[in-house]
Amino acid sequence: MIDQLRDRILDGTYKPGEFLPSESELVQLYGLSNKSIRKGLDELVAEGLIVKVNRVGSKVTEKGHESTVVTLGVSSSIEKDIFLSKLLDDFNELYPHIRVKIMTITITNYTSQIESYLENEVIDVFTQNSLHFQELKESGALSMLEPLKAEKEIYPFLNDVFSHQSLQYAVPIVFSPIVLAYNRTHFSEAQVPEPDGSWTWEDALKHAETLSRGADGRLGLYFIMVSSLRWPVFLMQSGEEIGPDPSGGFRLQGSKLLESIRLCKRIIKAQDNYLGFLIEDNKDVMDLFRQGKVSMMLASYMALNELKDSSIDFDLSPAPFIEAPATMLHTIGVSMRKTDHVAARLLVDYLASSRAQGMIRKWTNSIPAVRSLNEIRLEERDSINRPSRYPLFREIMATYSSRSRLNLSAEAFDQLGRLLKRYWSDLITEEELCAKVEELLVNG
Image (tube, rainbow, N blue to C red; front, side):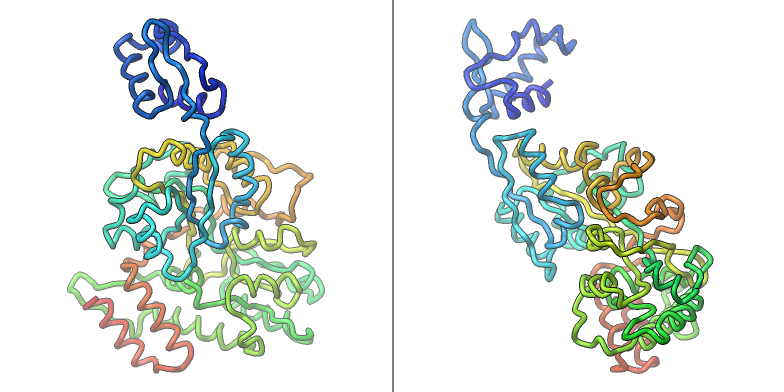
């Protein structure tokens, strides 16, 4: 009852100076006792949304219709990930008296900035991914977040990403496996069969050479291996666990993990270095793919939003594998600072609602977190350039692995990534890599 009355005050159904239904009417409407009705109305009084007029009723105040500001902290990519501006326009239509102020947070030191903003009450709501959540958890910052309700309509494995000690600290809004995106025109011209779930990395490398051969400056396979959403895929595909064995030891030398790390180096060396300093991030790779300079790349569904307004003929396939099919799960959720800020709660609830999620499904290539929306057949007349195998993500869910599968703390994950970059750049030998990784995983 409280939630419904609050929403109707904020959306203008009940205007300033108007009276809510009488207590007796509310008793009949909600099936509650007089005592419960009064208790609920007292909470709205405490929030400043109504005042009780003796012998008359509960009158709506001006506060419920003043411009309320909610500060939303986001990464620079979130606009393309979920078409945020379109969602906020819709939110503003529902709640015209709530103004959402956007604060873009730089990707470098994202979580440390989030912690600072939470401590100083600079932001009310913010987006984060699974690595950010792990870092906030390990730093003890979850105490500054408002526990949220785990939405039943959202895939349970996504809720698990943002759960700790049976509490939910973020509501998932979009997710993606890492898949192989490819240019269908290139494959047709080179008479190379399009990739499918049977492809190993050896298949990918063999066909990449054919796709590159004779093409003016074209790369058959290119992606930024050092991305935190790319290299972990190879370790997951090794089939071996990372971390100390039951005796407390760990040996990288001679393991399948090391074989997967060597494969990464082979792929890096096979990717022509002529691009050099022209490539800074995954967006640069996407630009080259759109221009027809790259035939295949590892990508998330969110990254494919860079192609939604293009005319390129592209499609998707499961990521090639080593020992067994496996890929990384990338999830973005929305969290709320511990506060009784009513408008902030409304924004969080909206972003997780079927209404907002349906708009994400229609206007982006991102995958909404609400399960039922992904079971509806897409319309033939699509508003964006969407791959024909877009539903692939449903067929490969058994291959998803979250970052927790690596059994690494956020700090150890970062250190391991740095060591691998040095090895792939030939700054340290394989023997040095093994020694340093073994020390890292055994001694922390």
